Image 1 (spheres, protein in one colour):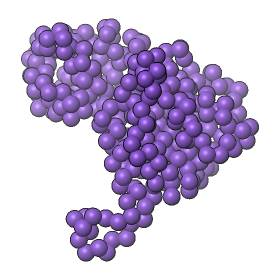
Image 2 (image 1 turned 120 degrees about the vertical axis):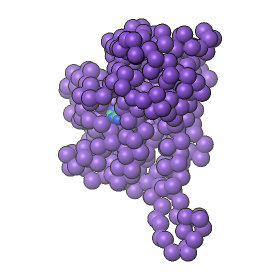
Image 3 (image 1 turned 90 degrees about the horizontal axis):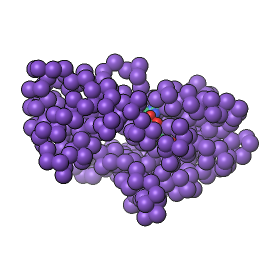
Length: 307
Ligand SMILES: C[S@@+](CC[C@H](N)C(=O)[O-])C[C@H]1O[C@@H](n2cnc3c(N)ncnc32)[C@H](O)[C@@H]1O
């Protein structure tokens, strides 16, 4: 299963993450342990790595794989709960926190995981299958306006209204249950040339909404700062502009000591900077990496240090 995912910017991210080889680290997005395994290689015998993963299948795969690894503690938790996990582990502060966002290649390519539009599967898109709402629930019950807003906001899809209208018309006759139902609706609207990109945007929008990916990311960033040691690093790899903007804005906000006159016209609010930005511009994968791993093409790596 692990061959299904090649870790992205492995060296770049870990060179910036690991400041103390005997430290305690948090890998927010275990996946198939590409980064996890490499962190363990770099840690001393007294180092510790704690990792979270919402997807049960990936979590169980790693539980088996690392059954004998005493320096690794795994949680089938949402990463937004990093502060709760730290409490359970009796850890006050981590030396570094890594998040490699989005979904794994296994989730994207494996029909049974239900994330792909390339093969027919149940239209689900939940990473955490214990959560109630599926993509099928959304396309079958949300109003035309709400659907259009989801496609526009989370998929940056220009044809959002047209697609939403077609979905609402289609479901009057037949329930939308499988990925192929949604693909056929969009196929009838969009020229073949644009089809793949449109499908990718619509599926991305539904996935982000179903998993509350942006909400979880914001909570995770806030909570990470609370449990990061002074000089500890927060390292985040994003795969689309919506995620990257959240990380960029968060780093900027937490690294500002003074507020703008508009935010604080009387100049009386005292604000303490919590982070120093290490990557003024995001680091992107080398040409070679993109050649060998297509999924890396949109990756951006941002790093901040706890003050
Ligand atoms: C890009 S993959 C990580 C790959 C991993 N770094 C590797 O190299 O094998 C992202 C993983 O994060 C998980 N994930 C996404 N959102 C999550 C969340 N809110 N909490 C915990 N895990 C999450 C996904 O299920 C997926 O397995």
